[in-house]
Length: 148
Image (cartoon, rainbow, N blue to C red; front, side, top):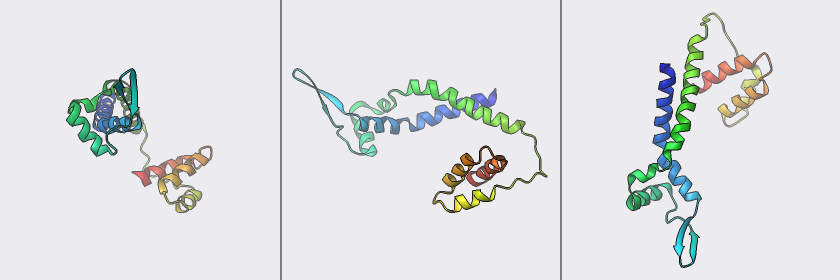
């Protein structure tokens, strides 16, 4: 239960920390409606970078306005993160330790990863292709060792 709660807290902190950037990014992708006689006109935002958007928003509507719309995101992301992190930790602690077992990745993993600029992408792609082979668990272990 503690792992589930810790995951919820971690997910909430992550969403809260990144929300101002998400908010500005979304604002930059949408046009704002300006009232004119007889209706509204859509105009671009008065800023073109995230930094300028942060400054503009804080100056015009205050720092707390950067967190507009965060509540629904927290209501969805906190339980999702709690389940993800909690389940991960529970499964890791339930896994029997086998210090004598030595798993080696498939030789194709190394060939594929070496031929791609992104090792992580190469390992990930190879893992997808070998998901139904006997090398799937070795591929997962290799990806964990490679990616931390």
